[in-house]
Amino acid sequence: MTRYRQLSFILAGFLLLVVAREGWAGPPTDQLKTSIDKVIQILEDPALKVDGRVKERRTAVRKVANDIFDFAETARRSLARHWQGRTDREREEFVQLFSDLLERSYISKIELYGGEKMQYGREQLDGDYAMVSSKILTKQGQEVPVDYRMLRRGDRWLVYDVVIEGVSLISNYRTQFNKIIQTSSYGELVKKMRTKQEEFLEEEAKSKGTAKN
Amino acid sequence: MRRSALDLGVGIFVIIGILALSWLSVKLGRVEFLGGHGYQVTADFPSVGGLKPGSTVEIAGVEIGRVESISLADYQARVHMWIRSDVKLQEDSIASIKTKGLIGEKYVRINPGGSDRLIPPNGRIREVEAPVDFEELLSKYIFGKV
Image (tube, rainbow over all chains, first blue to last red):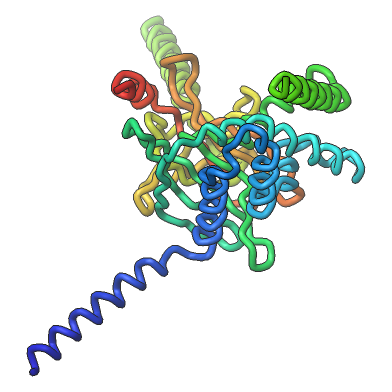
């Protein structure tokens, strides 16, 4: 009898430990994981994989992305010093153009998802900032380290920077924007971004037209 | 009389030599007297890969400070840097470890941010980028294609 009791105590202790361990991942990791799982679910949904529903799928992914990403913060940090001289309207326009740019560059890549596994690592908290380390395990067995930098907004944690293989998204765009603004002007940068977006929309419309024919 | 003039000449010559040597060593060793006017900031990197105390800290290729020391904190590399007092770093500045040329020495490059808040003395640069490890990339390239 006492032996059983001892055993159950050990088991309970072990279970508690396991639960506590799982619970260690704080709210930033939890919220990030929920969003990424949602995106994977959308991408793996066979009903949305049909050719005609690409747009629907993109909208669904973008909706989840809007919930976890703080595009305004990413845009502000990418524009860096040049953000301060902008009027509210210019800022709004820039955030819109910048999120279009990110969508253009990354959503098409996300669609290539083929069952890669995500592995969440440690989480570092520092006041209203957090960094969640993760790894993407490809089918070839490669590991790609991806770190998410997050910011607390009320009770939500929002991603503002993604660091892939040690290369920060904000740092990349900050350097590019700075170069364009310094060699030409802010107006030129906005014009460039706008034409790129228009070209993209045109191309998309065209490819849709050919797909239908 | 003549002898002492020669002695004096040699003495002066030696003193000039010593002064020149000490000037050279201060210049080459980049010793800063009076502690240097500046403030200290730290940054935690996953790896510093070849950065050393004395390495430069630059913005747009201009030296604005130096790496003072590097220590290990929570299995990460904590880099302590001296920054010139006339250079203010915004709270969202990004510190990255870069290489001069393809195989040159390592230095810290700071990409200035746009935040209103500045990093105070003894503050921390939160946004960092680790150096790109060429060997790792190479091995990924070599072994990656299964």
